[in-house]
Image (cartoon, rainbow, N blue to C red; front, side, top):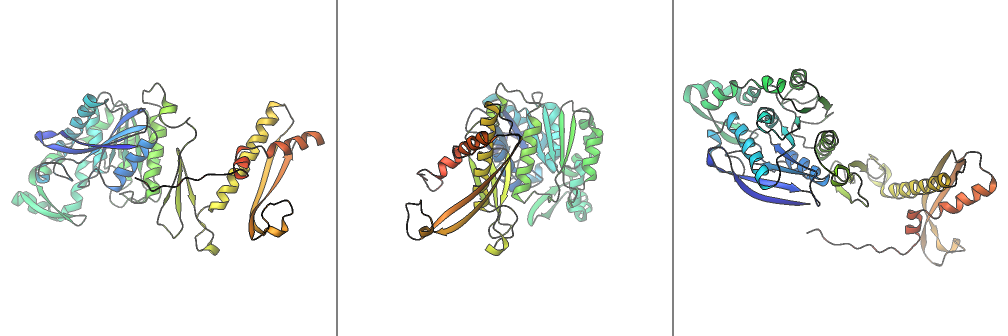
Length: 407
């Protein structure tokens, strides 16, 4: 994957800083992502979701709204309307430089802005919101104690997430004028509403309001246990997985399965620390997410299988699949295969057929149970076939592992 960084002209003629996350091959579709209020394109949720979608073949444009991040302009002069206009300008830039976005995504107030902008981006067919308020004015609750002063003085500095921002009376006047539910009712695009039931910043009732107002096709997915900013990597990756699978029904692409990484092999396996505990790892295999850990006795929390567990699982799955392919091809009455495996260390001197005579050796015990009306000859042949599975051959042949530092 690659990330293109550039600027484009937004509302008011300001240059807005943007990042376009691109898949390795030709994109299956282009998407536009709107970040949360006072956030930026490089916040954890925005970056993680965009990169995860790019890994699945969808190019994603994320950018800093006027006056935020590396974009030009003064945040104090921005309004909800100017954010909506910035999104339309971003879509225009994509349309001219690559292809118009067919997927629109927005997080928190960015979700409300995406809903307001969707009608002005005709090529968009799928709209996804994450923790979005049903009324843009909801955001004023973040500085409710200053509202009277803002109206009286015209402009006041407030602290949001530990950072100072100047809010003007024009911002308040503008945001109350937006009737977002009218935009939702007249959306005429597929809608996915994602929200956490424990979101204490934007309550789950906002998702209910949006979902009820929308016409079909519409979907709701609960982001169980997630916080408002999706600070946990697994929550952002889950959101990306759901958006990819859901959007595939609505986007136009001649080769959706190939472009979105659903039929390509071999696939990359990415393993990343979650930092939830000492050994906890998130494993990404195409659209799939797995968790690895060590047992409690080894210093872990046993939140998932250990490295050797996955090794044995790979051998066991390959064994069973290989036997099934052979049985089906030969029309053998094999009903079911069960493979039970165990890894251990043994003394080399205890292995008569091993070339190594000193020290310790790894040993994998594999027990195969076959159900079905098989005769002795058929069972014998299937046991021979088990040793021909590709993973078995890999483990018992010379393996070359090439390791290098990431760029």
